[in-house]
Image (tube, rainbow, N blue to C red; front, side):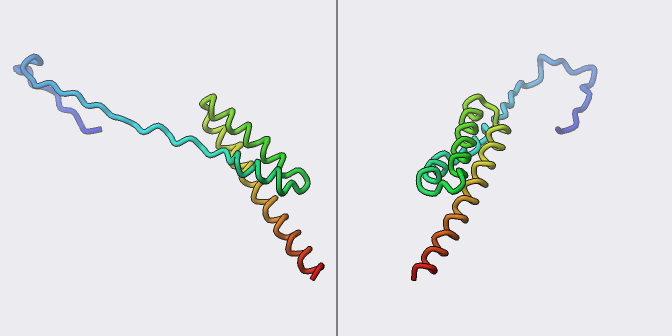
Length: 103
């Protein structure tokens, strides 16, 4: 904030020009819940139920986002993202192993 100066005694407040400053803040961007990715992981790559767990955390993240708890939504969303990544990597490894063994 800028430093303020004390008005001299001979200055009347009514004689000063009036101005208003309005600060507009952008609302925080809502965190991602990765619901669609979790749904596809559940349907197509549900190794050891990681896709189902990711889907559950995505739904929890969406619920928290609706309630306005962005920190909880961010936490659940990042957990869903990590579970989706782990399930995707495991499924890729399984496909590579199957292709190399079969051919």
